[in-house]
Image (cartoon, rainbow, N blue to C red; front, side):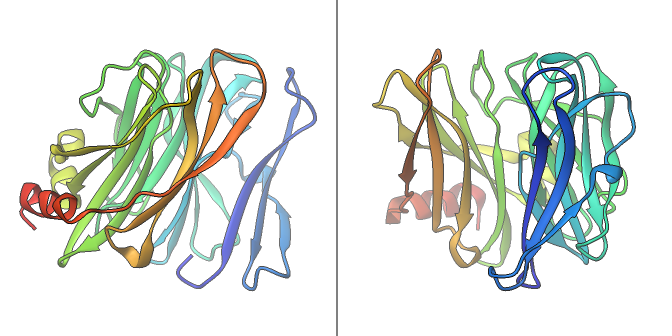
Length: 275
């Protein structure tokens, strides 16, 4: 976080079967040597759903920490799902805030991101549409508006989690959405100005500033879960994604993918976004 503390969040399972999800943990350290491991199960939303997942990033903005998570009916049962954030004003004590109450549409892993001022976003994988669902907050995560669909110009049968990052370029707050399309096993990044996303939601990402940063050559594997860091809050980025065997079997192949920015790439983003 902005105080130099590393935060990890984990769901605790005894099995992948019904009833096997038994807890949630917040693990943190200010020196990466001494760690505090706290039980935050009691901070989970009480909604009758018996399983939860902590996938996704945490952000620390405006003196508030936000960490997305989702719940589902039970392990192996996605009859219903719900979306939440853990919210904290000290980075230690957490309360749950509802983004979307329990409903039949299966919407799961998310990325939370800053949009300037008190504006934050929540972009989640929508398994029903094969796209992504976006919710915005104007009060640093205290309340959230209704999900709306975002496609990023892709036709996707099997959605993948998005990872969204915010950084400043030439004095302008820019938001980069990293997505993978499992139909063609390619990975994309789409840039937009934070102010445009606040005003125009999903269409605030500029499809003219969309780039394929990796084209798969490892069939039958596909890019799935990953994360990206913008070095020193700039356009330069490094990411790591896991290759899963698809349609199944054999475990996971982990490979490091480093994105480099050629001059034309940066110039194209600047020109397209007017920055």
